Length: 208
Image: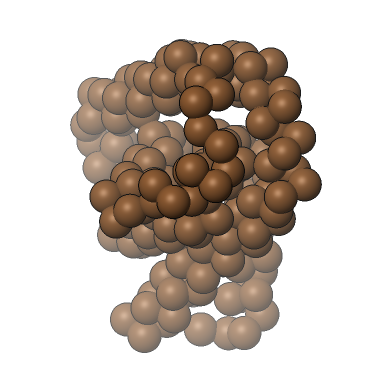
């Protein structure tokens, strides 16, 4: 694959990655309300989800959606409902001040970290329109004669792009200063976050 084409593809995907959305909100909530490791594990979940969508897109997922429109509609409903579920969980936790920073770090365990990973993965996979974006970019910018090695390098870079960006967000927001601010205003912030997630979930369900 030509370096220029590769750079344009990665640059286009990077713009989408850093754009605010449900993924950013979930990572921010995890990094602020849990631990730094939780945020990092959730970031790896984001990267894994991105690779799944990108790999399926390279395999012709849009053709499958075109052939079976009901499949795309079903995935939209499932993804939107998951975002609404996350909104509900966030709303219920808005008055939960039972933990302090020290207690929460002490309570960190493998199961909790795996839970954060799966939350990141499912949040990434909650919007099948992401696969359409990947497909559109690949269709317009990927050379027709790309090799398996080209695809492997591209998927690796996508994983690193998503994981590194959200890890950076996690490291910044898990700093004691933003976390302290969050804990002081937790109820209000969680109300707003729940509202945004619910709105995004509904928009995914109703989108064309």
